[in-house]
Amino acid sequence: MRDIVTLISNNLAEVMDDLGIDKSDWTPLLTQATDTAHGDVAMPCHALARVMRKSPVVIAKEISVACQDKMSSIAEVDSINGFLNFTATPNWLENAVADVASDDRFGVNIEKQRIIVIDYSSPNVAKTMHVGHLRSTVIGDALNRMLTYKGHHVVPENHIGDWGTPFGMLIEHYLELESVAVVDIDFESFYKKARSKFDENEEFANKSRNRVVKLQSGDESTLELWQQLVDISLVHFNDVYQKLGVLLTNEDLAGESKYEVLLPEVVTRLEQANLLSFSQGAEVVFLEGWVNREGEPLPLIIRKGDGGFNYATTDLACIIDRVENIGSTEFLYVVGQEQTQHFAMVFEVARNAGFMDESIRAVHIPFGMVLGTDGKKLASRGGLAISLKDLLDEAVLRADAAIAEKNQELSESERAEIARIIGIGAVKYSDLSSDRTKDYTFDWEKMLSFEGNTSPYLQYAHARICSIFNKSGIKRESARESVISLVEPSELALARSIIGFAEALDDSCEKYLPHRLATYLHSLAQSFAAFYENCPVLIAEEESVKLSRLALCDLTARILNTGLDLLGIESPERM
Ligand code: ARG
Image (tube, rainbow, N blue to C red; front, side):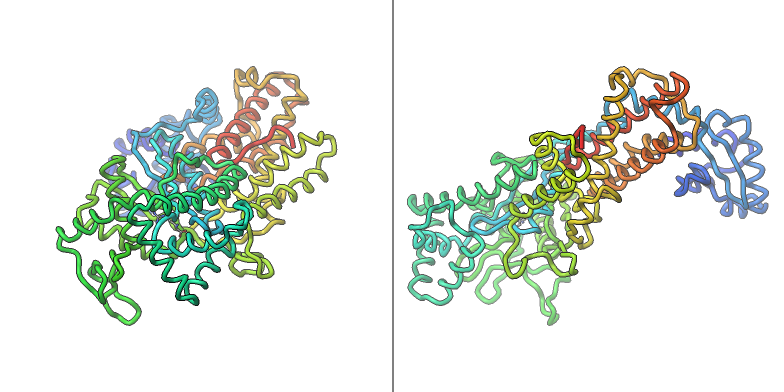
């Protein structure tokens, strides 16, 4: 309803001029109403009492009278207790809905293109992907789709952890496992076993250190072993990506190893900027205001005493690459909130060192933990770590059971496909529909329910509309041509919801909060349910009413489908 606020503001200008009220006094007072039962736009007149030397009640009355003939085609105006309420007329809503219906972007504009790097998913080689990586993958992918839709050039980067000192011990451990078939490597215990051998066995530790030196000096046979480890891990990552249906491919890999060559350059540049200090044998950067728990200055470690570079050093190199090679002006890091301090320090060092200037927007997009229904961190089940692949398979199985109950007419293969779409959609949507900055509870019952703010509820609304059309024998394309007329309150309410799509998407993109779009889609589906309950469609008495309602159905389904797609969720036509 952003449009109606603008429109009312534009039309009110003349009225207010006549009354001698200054623009700067009244324009900030107009707000979109939270409860449409009282109108679409509200204006409290209390702040005008001072300048007009009249009571707010009198002012509101005067303005409403002056509005009567000037604005009657746009909105009805009421004054109550010093408030003005503007309610869009059915005629204005009809025009607004017709505009959305005839636009295949539903009113969403294309912004001036920005090159946006989104750093997401980013699991670690030779380790299993955990639920935190699942969140990053799902949220990052939704932002990728939404910002692309807004016209931006999105560069997805999967910053996998594929480099650094642990790779010495990982490669040595891999060599000792030689007899195990590659596909059978259990990454759940792989890292832990390598680490404990490293800690307990001096000989193994020495071999590992040697191996790091070889790896970093580009020894060919070591690089080959390293590549094998990376490739095996990629099979696992890609398996999860494919099940999830995310956009990431091997083309988007930009792992830590990619930036290795730039690391000495980072040190040189920090030195030139006079930022580097020595602390306990390591090269570090101290930043003003950063202290540890003991109140001592907290350094960002660039190069450890043993010569090894740090996680932060790679991120600094990565910033140089994004600015100088990719030419991006906006970097989004979809990474858990436990890394907040890391990113704040890295960004500050990068700015101080001149790696990025004010024109560049670097944003950490944090998210909370995934909790089980017991309120504890969802990490393991009876001591066994949860494998993401198993989790997604379980989602599909559970969805299959749920639809078997609901619809017995589906063929075996149709059911399998629908179960996949519903199961995966449920996992993604339950994540995306909650405010990412908070912890969220992973709850099978809730996410797979056909009631509430869930993807099955939205998908069902979409499928239901498809089935209305199937029954009607009318093609959706031809329903699109019909004139929409709005009479019943639930038709008006659905129309109000429909025209809010562009605004909801913009709001979601601006704050990088996918749940805003999800909340909108849920309220659209709710408005549709109320409309469908109150307004007969196929058995409407007049043909023109039937066609108008079918056009509303079609438009709702198109927006649901597009909105879910922007969240990375499919909408089946049958359920
Ligand atoms: N691999 C890291 C982890 O699993 C996440 C990397 C995030 N991206 C970055 N540029 N630091 O914690």
